[in-house]
Image 1 (cartoon, rainbow, N blue to C red):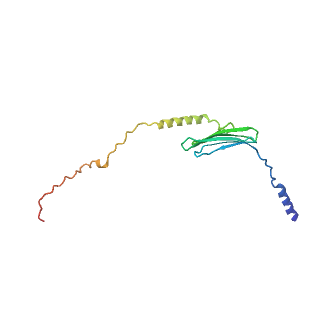
Image 2: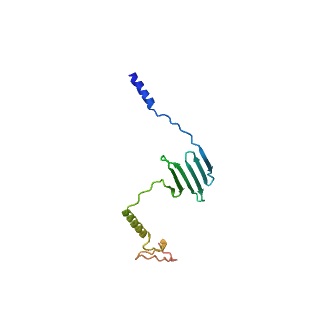
Image 3: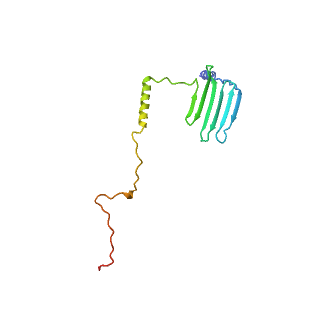
Length: 162
């Protein structure tokens, strides 16, 4: 029994993952400016293993920082992958040859899209126009038919005995 336990512990020790030796990657370039009070910034860095990244962010005075940049790295297959991007009020938009592209839409789907766009454009155009609403104060309303306004009552100076 003791031999089985000792054998199990030896097996665990051999099967334990061995620490990989990680080499430090040299930084070839590293420039950073900002962000300043308006949110403007730019940076650029490059490493010894082929990683490169640069970006620039600018605030045009409307409170939105618009960022443009690009980065590149070497894929496991040995190819250099380069991606350019913008980030603004529309979101993050990346472009590059390594990004996947959707398959082309089938012809029947394109016909449906064109029909929907035409229907939407037709629906968007007003069929007729309304004039401005007539504003009438509520006190100007006439009385219903058969109802007359009361005439003022004349006061007599004579008093009647009561």
